[in-house]
Image (cartoon, rainbow, N blue to C red; front, side, top):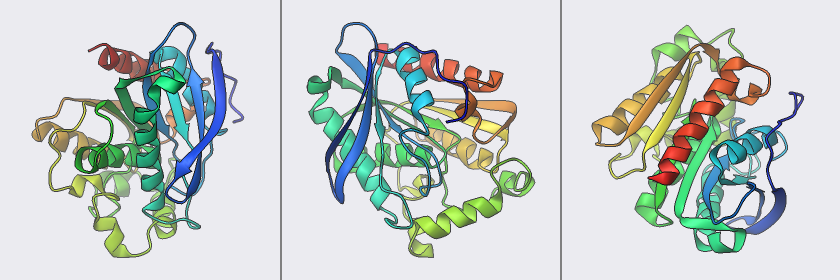
Length: 274
């Protein structure tokens, strides 16, 4: 929130609440300039399922709205430890279903819906794509996964050791987040927490996976991208050399943050047109 403000020009940003499995779910809907109906991009913020808010990710959502000419639905899902797993993923699934059902009422196109998120939000986006496939919901045309949490800490990776200290997000932070998010170790092995453990990764929407060279989560994001490819999926994997976890949050102040946003919005625009 302390970053330079976004210069993205959009039409409106409106807060509302929808019914959810644990009470009302706050949303913020960003509408681009021009005439709709617009493609719909669900956005699930990062913060380890413990911190984060609509306001903290306002800049990112404005940039996505403008750059992709998409209606962005930012979801203020329930946070841990007050509401542990699977509360957050239940809220994200419900919000995505709501967007599909009521797209016309918010000037959106129910036939062009994508999910996205960064870090823990990337986890929620990947999980939502799996749950929509298996449990029902709108057809998704894309998933944007920005340095996502993928394996719940149950599959050791080289990057978690190599980059576990000194690069903003640390291995100890991930343990702290997971200790707050899940109620038991067994929860980490559930696909709704660790999507790479799903029985099948086929028939999922095309994915853009962005990873950072000096990020503890680098390898699990790249492993997931490769697993999606092996399952027959369409995947674009981009590793940002020299970058650290959280770079997208600096879209208005770091060149690499801007490059990530530009890649994301261009890729989304292409998916929305296909």
